Amino acid sequence: MSTVWYFAYGSNLQSATLRGRRGIQVVRSAAVRAAGWRLVFDKPGLLGRAAFANIVPEEGAEVLGVAFEITVDDHAHVELTEGVAIGNYRRVELAVEPLDASVPWAPATALSLSSDKRDASLLPTTRYLGLVIEGALEHDLPDPWIRSLRAVPVREETEEERSFRAVVDEAIRRR
Image 1 (cartoon, helix red, strand yellow):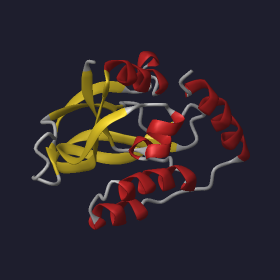
Image 2 (cartoon, rainbow, N blue to C red):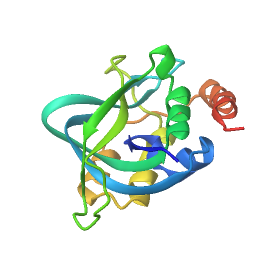
Image 3 (cartoon, one colour):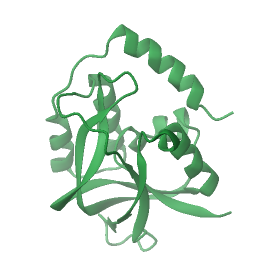
C-alpha cells in the first residue's frame, strides 16, 4: 500500500469530515506546523458567497494543522473532491514539523492545497468555521491557535447554501 502525507488545515481536520463525509481512511496522523504559510479564510466557494480556508505563502508566518498519512488513492479522492482538476485549489508541498517532538514518525513534508482564487471580502459561515475549530480541538492544537480561529469573523449560512451543501455532500461521498 503506497501512502502520502496530506496536511489539513480547514474542515478536513475534523474526523467527521475527512473520514466520514469524504470516506478517507487514515493510517496515522500528527499535529504539525508549516512555517512560511498563513491560514486565511478568503477562498470563494462554488456559490461564491462564503469563504473557505486557504493557505498562502508568507515569510515569518506559520499555519498549524494535521498531517494525515493516507493512501495514494485516498489522496486522489481528496484532490478530486476539493476541485483540483478544475482549478479550485492546487497541490503544494510543504515542509512540516511535529508540534510534539516525541512523535518519531511525523513527516518532514506533506502535500496540501492552496488557491490563488481569493476574495478578502468574504466570510466563512458559522457552520464551516465550527468544523475547523472542532477539528483543531479534536487534534489538541494549541490554545492560542484555537483562540485565533475563534476570533475569525463569520456569517450565517443561507438556505440556498444549506441545500447546495446537501448535493455536494452526496457527490463527494465515496461509493
